[in-house]
Image 1 (cartoon, rainbow, N blue to C red):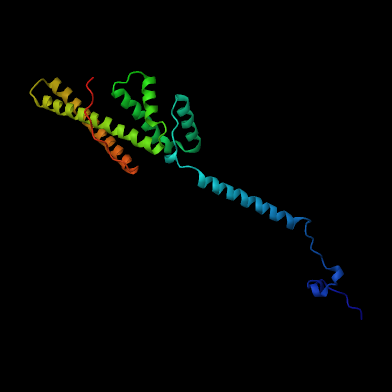
Image 2 (image 1 turned 180 degrees about the vertical axis):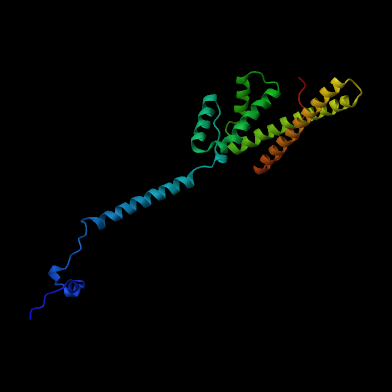
Length: 211
């Protein structure tokens, strides 16, 4: 009797003649192509790591400020590397140094800009932050002292007998001055917190120059 092979006979490789078994085909060059691709990927990752590790932090950057163009280019480069939120304190510091120059009698925008550049040229961003926020502390402290004196004076006026219209005006004025005093106190505390964060302290308040 002749036995006819069934499909089940071919489900196991031992039942199939070797010349009829499917042969796996390996793409030519595959083994040699995998290694170069892996090496390139490793090189890219290594380069990225080294670039990130060697990148100088914002605080350690030295500020070139010989000219207005030079510091403008420097600020633009920082804007390309760091988010705006990280540069906000730096921008505030530069602005405060210009305000300090104005409060010290320096007239003219260009002159105040020049005074600011002279203060930060060659310094690190950290040093410029400390200078600017110390100037902010001094400015706010003086404004707070001045406004507190006005508030006390107007409170005394409000308590004096007078017309109803005058009393209402003074009451509104005192309320407004109280809000300003509270705001200045918050700004002063904020300036002190920033300085402590950078390892600095608030400067001594020198009486402002008479106009």
